[in-house]
Length: 457
Image (cartoon, rainbow, N blue to C red; front, side, top):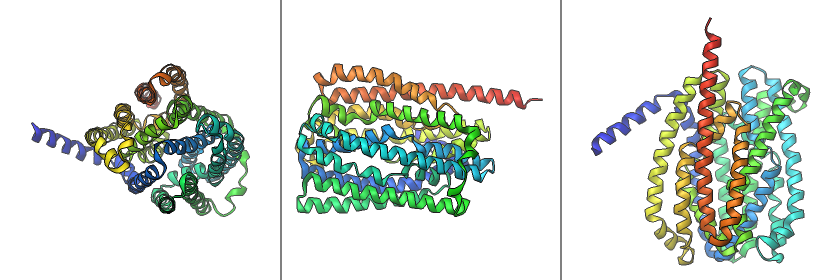
């Protein structure tokens, strides 16, 4: 029986890797995975040093500060990396470099404006964050301090999108590693000098700034090489025929991202607000350990999205189906094996590396693994909807999930704490991903049928 399963798995892998599209996705994601693997290992050491230095409660405060800034920044953001990948890729396929340059220029300008708005909001809302999240008004200066990270990320999203569509995944990967190494060195110094929470925040600021500024510099260099040094003088009027479509795409992705903040990315804020920093610390550790399972999967959407956009621009529907089916088998198989391993060894890992007081994080970890198995298996669900022109649907799903989840949070979290929050997040993964996959499959079938009908004389 085992031998048959092994042969079947081997044949499946050989068939999958005979697909040139999947090989290209895996090759590009391999660069990011190498960086993600190193970054995850570095991040784990960072987490261990930080957790031991700060203790559970301050570890929770750190999580609240970081997520507070991230949530405000993403609320103002228009997810310009996705816009750049979607439309620069389309214009390049059409042989229209002038509109490609104009699109990147417009995306960078919009992102700069959004980043400045986010920076002002962070400074203005920091006293409220300190009072309601950290439960300590004296930490307002720390919330404000971390807000400077937004300035370093002025055009980081647009830059990331351009590097992706230009297949500069290796460059993205090593810039990411460089930022993580700077963070690790600074956190190690904070640990040795007992610098406390402020020292850890400075470490994150410096490390993330290196990565973000590196992305921006690399993208500007790429723009010069592809479109000439005067690309930034390209008139934005070239985009006028597609202005409505571009605006709808940007607004849809912004709304979807903003609603996603409620559903998935503001977990630590809800627990900080409704419970206390101690439970926030437990939950932050559970989320950190989940990154071990996500580590090989997280680069895949970045590598898959450009390929999907190209194939859909060519109306190559069968290639899309095969690519996604094989990618899901690989991602799901890995995730199941990793989840089982983490479930068996999680307690030992926490006790040995993070110390006994962090053990209450383990039940939350097990709950989160259920939802993550579904989310990782169909990691491509959002990218596929964007590539096929259904950018509004993720926003609609997130809106429905946000209503359900907010109700669940206020009903369950005050009473049952961080474990209820973990259950709500896991359930939102299962429901949201399932709906997105079904709608994409139906849309793909309809597009393929229409294409065959139009192609038939």
